[in-house]
Image (cartoon, rainbow, N blue to C red; front, side, top):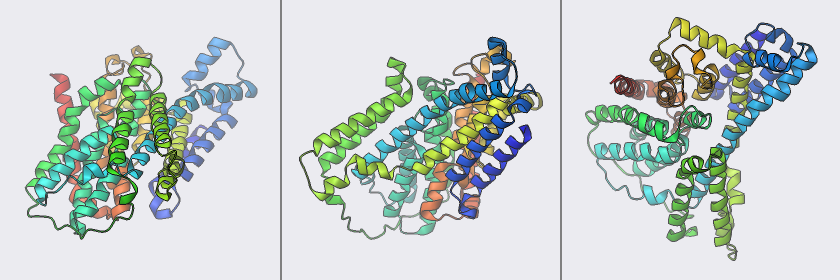
Length: 460
């Protein structure tokens, strides 16, 4: 049963990787992966726990003096381990739902156009740097997936040539992942570390901002020597929806939405409530304002802007994907698989910097969410003395900070390695091998440069 859990996880993971080849949504594969691993765990609990890899079971037996029979084991797994993990996962899911809804509201009210319509230059190099820095900082405030969608849509309005759009889309992917890595709300993996208590908002910004900036600037500097000339803009198209939202409402919703997002770390710091409470508070205020603002207006365009309708546009499959994959990783953590992996890494590699660099490179092949979830499960910040090099694993320790950087930026090396890359690939139909030839080496150089920067700053 112990090996069967691992087999189910690997098969589910393969299905997720080849989602676009087999035309099975990764959310479906993730949900099956998550539920089946827990099912096998609870049915084979006695056999699995008898191997002695589960720290939680050993502590439970010692504290409650129970016998290892089938009933007590299943009760322990269901009421203790599963309930504890679901509580943590629910916090991440609620946070994502709130953030994604706020972003959808801003987008539907055309708030992002206030930013994108300001870009007037036709010089390729200048546009490259504008797009890079705009994406970098926008991703830190929103998230890398949403920022990529917004910026790739902008490229369609600014660039008529497909190859130029692909090139700029590649830079958007790199900049979005780099920008999301140093912000506590910019990338789901950083969110996981922040919510889990491994890092704090101020520390991650202070520690990772410069390495993340380097990881974006190195590709920009290199590309600046290769691209020349001016861009050709596509013909302007009439936008029938433009008249639906007046400028005052666009700017109001943009400011309110961004304030709701960036106030979450402040809310957590002063109230000590979970971050998802701050996100839901922001969504509640935004929802209340929009309903109040248009309460007495019955035009068709106002009904289109109702948050009730906008909620239908939230990417529910992505939320269910996170639920499934995090549940599967939690099952492996409870059964002891991750303890075995952490022991192997400590014995065979040992160096935390090399471990994190490898995690980042692996995240370019597979999703970084389960990799970070596995890393969180492998190392317990509550008892760092049991690890051997404990100072790395305390809150805001080098391991967690470097993990945030590596997991966030390493996925740019391949286009399928991040949500931002997958979004750009789907929107622009970017060829996988074109990305490898033109973007991957740039992303890799940027990734290594940022990693070296972090290492140098740490040892100084």
